[in-house]
Image 1 (cartoon, rainbow over the protein chains, first blue to last red):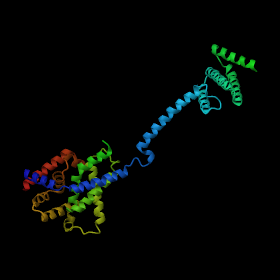
Image 2 (cartoon, rainbow over the protein chains, first blue to last red):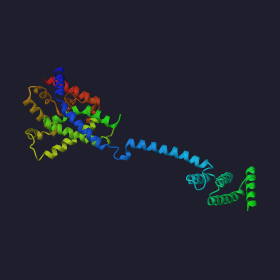
Image 3 (cartoon, each protein chain N blue to C red):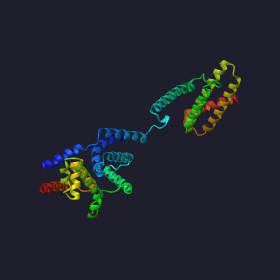
Image 4 (cartoon, each protein chain N blue to C red):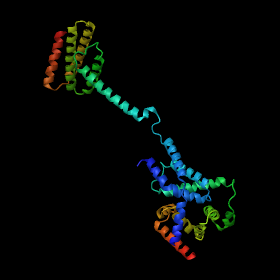
Length: 173
Length: 171
């Protein structure tokens, strides 16, 4: 019986496909696999492009946040300067985040102060009459908004601040 | 392991066994066997992503091979004449696979002096011969044969053992 098993085993080993055939078939299959399993068909799906774009976006965000922070905080950024639109845009977003009358009042008070600082800066430069006028208008507008939220205020200290501010306005008028 | 590596392993594990199986099914025609094996692997590659992992890879590939060979013979039926053995044994209920195995054996007998091995196998009945051939000649494990045929591994082992015993008596 061992003789038969041995003969069959020997026969089995002699019936192997040639190495050349196996290799050429594998190459053919490999090529077909690559053609049917392509993942990066387009240039924008390329890994290098993706990484470079992510880096660029991160850089842009970092850079713009620095510029934005400067534009928002600096009193030097006044009406007519290049960064002023950024400052206004940030303020608008900030305004939308204030939901309660208290928060709104605080925000308007802060905004009035900022406009006044800008006004001082412009007055020092004593050139831009039009811009000064525009600033004055903005202050008036914000004061009107402050007057509207005044009735809903509960916090006493904030009420006092708003009251002072509004009295100052009446004197001006 | 990624899919390509899996396919590479699948290829290396099955190429020899599949080649032997096809080689005997095409009457030991080496070139034809190589062409058919290439086509079978190409089919396997195309459906490798959809392959059901619950069934064994050998059984899956064997099904593809069997279907491919059936299609091949169907397409070639009109072009080429079937071997004389078919005409002789067709009425006995022998399947085409069996007929082609017989043709391969006859061809081998003419080609080589090692005919005695195949002569012995032809003495077994179809099922026994199939199991012995698959295990000893093609190189499939008992488990793989069991999955292909849809029987338990133990049943295959028992059948193979009995077939070998039968051969012992015949010798």
